[in-house]
Amino acid sequence: MEKTVVELFAGVGGFRVGLNEVTLDQDGKTIEKDTFKFVWANQWEPSTKTQHAFDCYKHRFDDESVSNEDITSVDKRSIPKHNLLVGGFPCQDYSVARSLSKEQGIQGKKGVLWWQINEILEIKKPPFVLLENVDRLLKSPSTQRGRDFGIMLRCFDDLGYAVEWRVLNAAEYGHAQRRRRTYIFAYHKSTHFYNQITTSTINAVFIKDGLFAKAFPILSGDLDIKMTNIDKSQFSDLVVVSNKFKFSFENSGYLSNGIVYTAKTTPILVKPRPLKDVIEKTPVAIEYYLNGSKEKYEYLKGSKRIPREKNGVQYTYSEGKMTFPEDLSLPARTMLTSEGTVNRSTHVIEDYTGRLRILTPVETERLNEFPDNWTNTGMPNKRRYFMMGNALVTGLVRKIGNQIDLIINNE
Image (cartoon, rainbow, N blue to C red):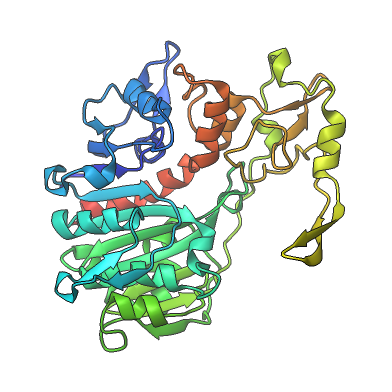
């Protein structure tokens, strides 16, 4: 089986950088292993005229197969055949309802990008799927915990897939950022891997036989596994799932034949890289130093209790104290898209000069394990920070990709 890949919501190419262990040479030319063959990618940002992420992807990979079209407008039949579909998609409201004319079936909430993935799965039927999302996906929405992830799992089940998931904190597996994300791996019933996994016990899928068990080992032993049924025997269709399903998903799980198994697992910790290993050791531009904004950052990162009022109700808004400046002996906190601006979440460090400054764009790239200056393709620094706040830790993808490589070799 060929290792052909389609990358959705591609951003600046994080999945591709990780899966093919991409680097840049001294002239800035992309060096890419050919482990996985990327046959098509899509990146379109609806809120901006200049498509910086698409431009970066196209520049770095010199690839004519990357699309800059709204994915909702793409004819899914035109997407090349592929054996692995990957993508990091936004956590949205996945609720569904019946159409006004019931003969037209079920409608997902307009503009929700999960339904674009689901349509591709229906039409192209890739044997393997790897997706990434925020960790709160498992608890969304707050008024019906677990509903949105339940809808996703039911979609996979209806299309003949088994699913594994794991919430991964990159720092717990040796990386330089405490970034928690949900990773989802699905495989079709037609695959050898599916048949192999279904011969394992459920405990063994979690501890030694599943993809995540091999890529990210956990403490062994008998797990407290919770179960629920999400197939048609309990919920006749997606509308019923949307209206009634509620479940407390743990950080690890497995779906097979309509049965959901989930457990809280504990990683076998790997010593993380500290922030000091990421910091540039040469002089940086003066623009990155605080130069008078120290007091502002001290206030933003300090503890506070602020009286507020909403709809006539008085309440107190509280924030705890954050370490200021950052402790360079620890891995970085999770980067947000607001990194680099004057706000509470921006990292402030004391560098080798003894002065306080924010991280440089290169340092944020290193925290996600992109090559230095990967996003230095003409976009403003503000957008470079934004891209890294949106990106994934490519080293995690590399570890997952090593296992997918073995799995496909076995097909």
